[in-house]
Image 1 (cartoon, one colour):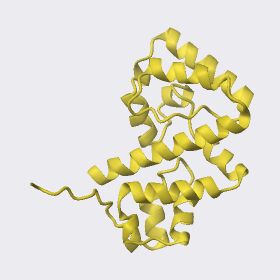
Image 2 (cartoon, rainbow, N blue to C red; image 1 turned 180 degrees about the vertical axis):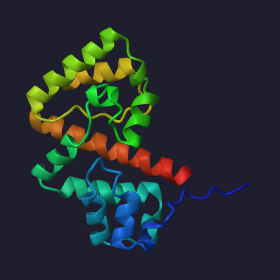
Image 3 (cartoon, one colour; image 1 turned 90 degrees about the vertical axis):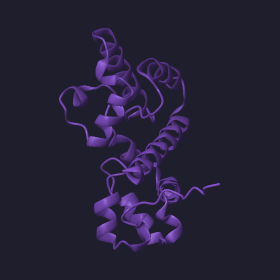
Image 4 (cartoon, rainbow, N blue to C red; image 1 turned 180 degrees about the horizontal axis):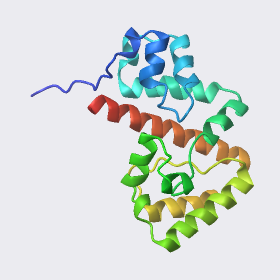
Length: 178
């Protein structure tokens, strides 16, 4: 019976200088390379050369950050099916993720619904709605949007952070599979 080998990141994070790690993994958290830098400063071993282990450490760095730093990371994310997406101004990862969920194929009514919910959400929480869209379609995303609008600010900040950590895990796994 063949044994499965864990997916490994290349370059191996444990072998990277700070500059090299930031170059290769600093974009995992949207416009927030400090998360990768914090992971490097924490100390990387060969155990962190898998996508899941690096994602776990980077997620821990985000969880341990101040609420102000966390909010800045949340605010770095684009609106779903928003103006930046329409104008082609998203990062390559965000563009691919949103397209994978069909957000680039919304009807005019769905775009209007996303625009309304994006505005209502930002008004209530002060940051954009963030969800790991992998495995979801636009209907599921709209349902999550409407459900999460009922959360209190602390719950929603924590939920957004958890979703960002999921996004990072998916991004690291995708890189290891390339």
